[in-house]
Length: 558
Image 1: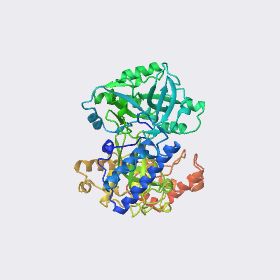
Image 2 (image 1 turned 90 degrees about the vertical axis):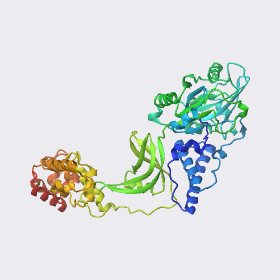
Image 3 (image 1 turned 120 degrees about the vertical axis):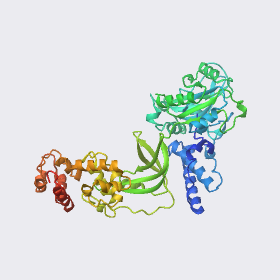
């Protein structure tokens, strides 16, 4: 278990799989210094709040990735190593035996390499809490010490004496020192779906307080993960601790023979209900060196295999503004590729233009990305802003609305493409083999200067376009021809008719076009706003021109 308050003596090797393909930023040296300094200052702020105040200002996984990014940037520009992250975490009470911490691996190949030639290896859940040393004299709890920097920590004895999960008196009058994890109790917690739920920060915050209420104390559990001076093998240590009064960890301690075994338990605990949050598994050899040789650094006899990131840190490469069929402007961020749940994410929507303006995201910013519903990329927050705020050509909302961009004129390309995609989609004419990619190819050729120019295309003309072979051209022409058989109401929807609710629609364009706003409002389910939209639609010169084209093409109803 990674001991807490944050142990991030991160070796670059541990994170190699995350950054192996990362290119160094194309920065002049002066800009590199500014950006490295800004990231270092941000991390220092996070460290100080966490270690001194017990406040977590950022999710642990985003913190981890930020530190990796800092290491990467410093190496790219041959800068000195970053200061020790735990320099603000030390306390006034020395640990009789150092807390070692863990290297964190993220790829199966790295775990496989670590397992090679190792014997008697056990796996446990990596409980997501805060680490503590508990010291007993003649069976009585004498002292509790926070992990701190692994060498010294804070005196937590007063709070520990209120936590029922910590035995106050052992069943035998022994002198004893154990290391374990204080965690926030959860009921049937499934890590894969619920995530960390801020469990670690909750416990860290409570333990940093001067007083701990009975209710708060009852919410804290204890998972003992080491008895440095205990029996030589892990099963004996576990069983003996249970007889002394500690909650048994036997169900969460499984012997493994190979990588497949480790993968099995990792997946099992990731998706099974547990009484605590976890962020991976720990693999440890049963036997380890004498406790007197332990140091406040990652040991060779244990490692952590982290779960997939629920949130990834991504660099913004570009900000695009997508204009939808109705004129809604959606900022879309192009990202340096990141992996989430085995998926490569290259772009994410910023939601609305207003949200993007509030966040003020520019190329070079570092943002947090997650998966909504475990499938759809979602922008969560801005983690770090680049020092240079690039100027962007932001569309004017006044230029785009439900009746704008019926031709692919400069600035209208996005909305016009959205109109074509809607027209051929299931909401419109439901044309087989016709999607956004089809329209993009046709637009590149300059053959579509109007929403309905495709009606006049023929098979030989399509066959001469790169990307359209004889067979695909034939399929496309058949789809285009089938559009002529679609009913009038379907054509209306394809053109972008505003929703009509329960209104009775006439079977001819002329009849509908003659209705004024008051007549539309008299229809069932049509309010003043929608009535005005419908009236404007049937009177718009561009829409009228489209109706003339469809009339000339012999489409029913026009």
